[in-house]
Length: 81
Image (cartoon, rainbow, N blue to C red; front, side):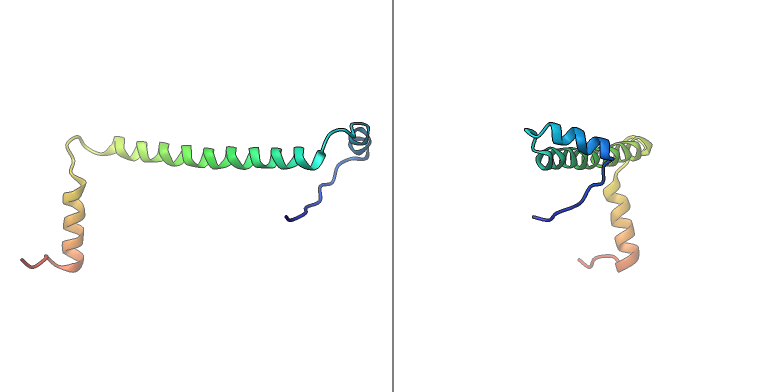
């Protein structure tokens, strides 16, 4: 496990010492993991919203497979039978 250092004001450190029954390392790890999870979930939510926005712009009954086939054929040539 890796160690990191955190700077806190002297007053905070004094208060932490008074609450010596609290495992401060454990508490900080949990807060860090919570923030990481929130950020990852936010990124996923943004990606999903972005995807939904793109889907809204597509005309109804639009067939993406036809467009992909045309791009592939123009790039690689028409597949031989």
